[in-house]
Image (cartoon, rainbow, N blue to C red; front, side, top):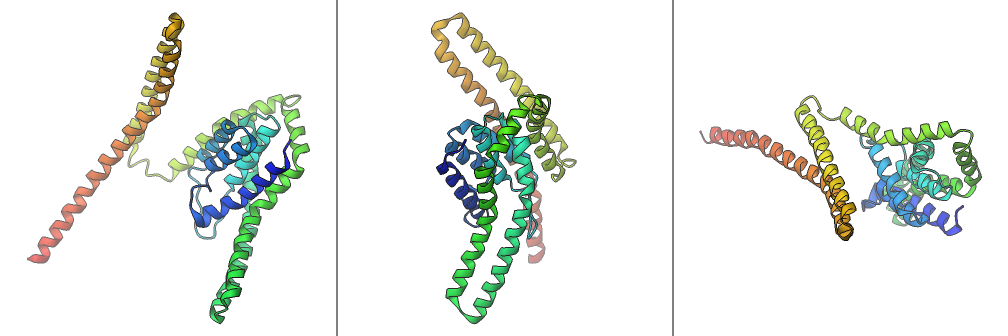
Length: 294
């Protein structure tokens, strides 16, 4: 199912992404990026981006503060993409059956990594007091290695030894348990909506409900409008074969324009709201300055 170099690269990336998320901040520590890299390694970029994007939407409202642990969405994306491509699983099934459960289980390896990192952190503190900079560098990098191993070890074990199990599960979901496979497909398609719901739970929705309703209506109207225009261009292409190629290109542009239009409208509304809220603050500052002069 997997070549040795694919297992090696995916394992190395699993270690890299957690360090990037904690220290390097090159955006490689996000679920979308994990899906893209995993898709490139496995030879199916489309599946990787689909799973990574769906996982990113699923964890929109999930965050961590201080020493709190959260689900390891990146490692879940790596495994879901690898097995979806390698075992021929439906991407939505892989997301629901592998991606999310693995991400939740790896909370425990995250806790183990935090414990190990804290241990080496205390050793670094002792090294600083003794001004033993050589030992400090060693213990600092051991802390980083403990973080990386908390991701690399489970990913390697799953990819190297979990292939027969995933193949058996895939065969069952496409055979006697097809009903369960269809259910997992539906669940995988609903997970991004769960992410939006979690995000809305922590946003001031009641205060800005007008913007929420306006965005929903604009998205629905624009989607319908551009879908109709795209269908019209397809009908024109069917009638006039000579215009097939340019009209199909136009349909693709129109389809992409829908989301771009909605995004620009949302940006304009956000900018207007921001500027309107800045005016009272500026006016209050001017009044305070006048009072001080008096």
